[in-house]
Image (cartoon, helix red, strand yellow):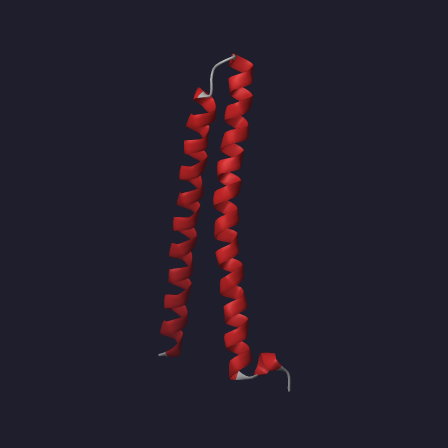
Length: 88
């Protein structure tokens, strides 16, 4: 019998799934912020402005990243509630 079929195997699988989920949260935040910086930097070069657009789009990207984290946490909470309800 493999580890995946034992109760400990399910706990390990759940741990790996949660770890993967947590890593995507960080990636989403960094990626959204980086896209904001790149777009802002491009607009600053295009319009020959100081780092105004870079700062603005960094803030927008960071906000978008945190919004995505919030949405993912809500979805995971809903999934956990559905799983807990199915066990009752």
